[in-house]
Length: 205
Image (cartoon, rainbow, N blue to C red; front, top):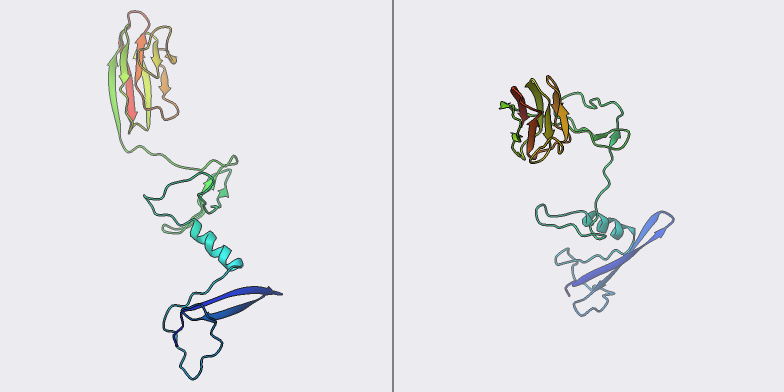
């Protein structure tokens, strides 16, 4: 006689899990005696668990996804909660390279990150009383700054086509301006009446 299926259930008895196992044959009939045959571990043994252990296994399986294939589904997808460390003043929590470290957030729960630009380009844009492009759009831009090295104010627009009444900021002669919020679009400018000089434009990438 071969074993076709083993099923069971568990009950919590005061902190001790009692496992009840039922052995059936291929037809689903319960096997109550094994006769003189030898019982081995050959074949497939299906153990059924419908208690806390099953719930725990299902929760573990729920958060396993295939990278690059699995898609997010609202109210269906699940994930594990990741703990972080609140650090009002950022400081290292590890001693040497290669150690495992926790993520750190500020007092508002914002994750600390660091952006560094390995290269820069500097150009001079001749002052003009008509609209000129100071920086073309660049999705690789990490930051930019403008220095008004001219004899007149320049009105700068974070966008296309600056005019004397349509601009973002006015940089006086000798003034300096840093482009905010990681803006990567076009930057145009226009000087106020008969200017001479340049705008010194630095782009970080």
